[in-house]
Length: 154
Image 1 (tube, helix red, strand yellow):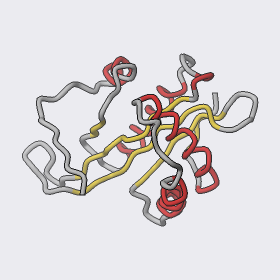
Image 2 (cartoon, rainbow, N blue to C red; image 1 turned 90 degrees about the vertical axis):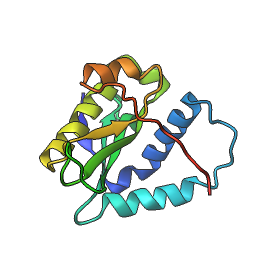
Image 3 (cartoon, helix red, strand yellow; image 1 turned 120 degrees about the vertical axis):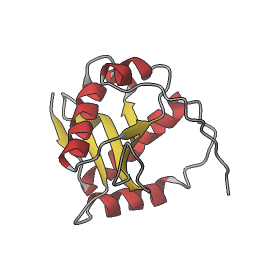
Image 4 (cartoon, rainbow, N blue to C red; image 1 turned 180 degrees about the vertical axis):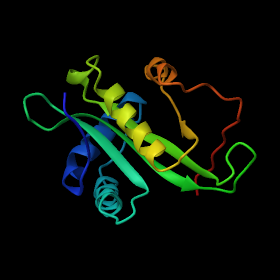
């Protein structure tokens, strides 16, 4: 199993895996207008000199693209008693191609992403889990929080 940090050249495949993730959450009723802007963002952020976004990918064993990915960012918020510098990690795209599931690819990508956060001194990492992903995240040390989440679309 080959796990590596993604480069801008992986943007197309990362978008394909994002589609897999969105379909897993039942978000399949859309047009593809978002793909080109998302790809542009990936290319820009993956090629930054001091990146605050990272993606770790598992290559397919047959060399035919990517099997899985884990993508996350580092955000800076106001500090608090548990996280004085306010830097947090946010994982927002962990996806495995359906024909590559149950082989450890997402786990390996997540472990690499968590190490990337540790290497940068990030003390807290957040994510939202699907029911299918919860066992993986719990095995990696994530716990459910009582924090309420709300959202507004502008």
